[in-house]
Amino acid sequence: MKKFTKVLKYIVPYWRKAVLNVSFNLLSIIFSLFSVTMAIPFLGILFKNESLVTSIHPFTFSAASIKEYFYYYLSQMILDKGPAATLFFVSILIVLMTFFKTFFKYMAMYFLSPIRNGVVRDIRNSIYTKTLNLPLSYFSDERKGDIISRMTSDVQEIEWSIMSSLEMIFRDPISIIVYLGALFFMSTKLTLFVLVLLPLSGLIIGQLGKKLRKKSFLAQTKMGYLLSIIEETLGGLRIIKAFNAETKIADKFYKENNSYTRVMTSMLRRRDLASPLSEFLGTAVMVVIMWYGSSLVLADKSALTSQEFIGYLMLFYLLIAPVKSFSSAFYNIQKGMASADRIDGILLSKQEIKEKKNAKSIEDFSSSIEYKNVTFSYIKDTVLKDINIKIEKGKKIALVGQSGSGKSTLVDLLPRFYDISKGDILIDGISVKDYKILDLRNLMGNVNQESILFNDTVFNNIAFGVENATQEQVVEAAKVANAHEFIAKMPEAYQTNIGDRGSKLSGGQRQRISIARAVLKNPPIMILDEATSALDTESERLVQDALENLMRNRTSIVIAHRLSTVVNVDEIYVLQDGVIIEKGKHKDLIKIDGAYKRLYELQSFS
Image (tube, rainbow, N blue to C red; front, side):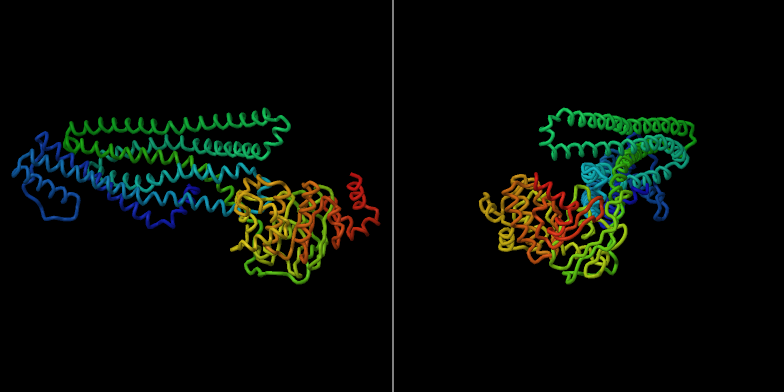
């Protein structure tokens, strides 16, 4: 119930529409009540056992007084116009009451639709915003497909289960209260008997709902696994085909799909049991009331007349519908709560990278960047140990070493993609934790080994993250990155769509667009993470020229796989198992005859 309350908090911005919805629902229920109670005098007139009311007491605002006045005027109509005309009048009243009932019901639904869709939109926005703000470490432990499943199918499940139940939540409790009030007014004794039976039905339904929630949670988790396999298949299709692994990956998918199908079948069987079970229990209760009420009427132990008892049964039948739909809503909510639990897995995740309340602004730096006694660990494993590096403004340094030595992690600490475990990172002598995160990251541009491009135009990919970039600025950035020539030859030049992740481009072209993006941002600090390691010789030459243009007059940190690309940097740091084992210029490190020289000679020999 606590989770359900959290979901309902999203309704608060729509409270005006919610008030209108409840108001129209109340009017619809009142007219529904009137249309049914009109059947009582209709039956009395039809069976000619309606007692005429010839005198009335002074009017008061009470149900008894209203009933007395209505029957008085009905009696006068019978005496003046005859039973047939009175029946026609009552029939017209029933039609009018039904019209207003349905009209107000539609108006209630009219104001419910924007609430339902707005809440789902807001939940989806909340998840997406939270996902953007979560640290990178969160995504190291989660399946990408499962996160997508939570943002899509789980939100969809909330829409279909919880939001579709809003109508019942807003309308049915009011219906139940109003109808029960009317039943109490007609016969307190009989209604108390009803109240003994209804909780027993609710208890049976409630037990089924608890099991449904567990099954639904498992089903949504299985769907997350399925989406993960699909995402991995699409991303690795080339490798799957190259290794003839179609059968292996298909068997994995079939296994998970069959497991999901079994869970869904079990869950749907439980859900589908709700409607027939509530219908059976409702009918059973109805029959018991008919038997008990009839025995009271026949034994003259009830104040109800025979036509009033029929009216009572009709009113009770009206009560069954909201009770039944309320029980269905209960099932749906239990099913939706499983998705809410999974969504909370994202929304309630800790925001490990936090900005201080009085964080400083920074637009440029004037002195240096310094890693001071930096140690970093992923949960238990220590990745970096006691790192000390100082980079003067305008200088270029390189980080080299074997894969897994901690090079990429070291540069990820500077923009606070992760926070250090010990030590500090300073810019102009001030800890990076004291700066505004947005300002800190604005100081830096990134070009990575894997070019991250989006399914959009060349122009929008280069201008990504730069507000109001002009055509001239984008073209100039492309020229600096040696990209303008091939872009100009494309079908629509800068307005050409480059496909998913830039699939329409070669590796070198993708990398040069990434460089153009960094050029346009024009940051004072450049981070290059093995930007040429995956390219052929010709592409590497073009990209390397572009990188030289990019690094000119900028403070640069270069992670190098090919050591030939960093021989001219100001200082090289050699990492091994998270520790700096050597540092110096290229020619000095060659003289040392250590790890750097061995790496360099190995590559030269290759």
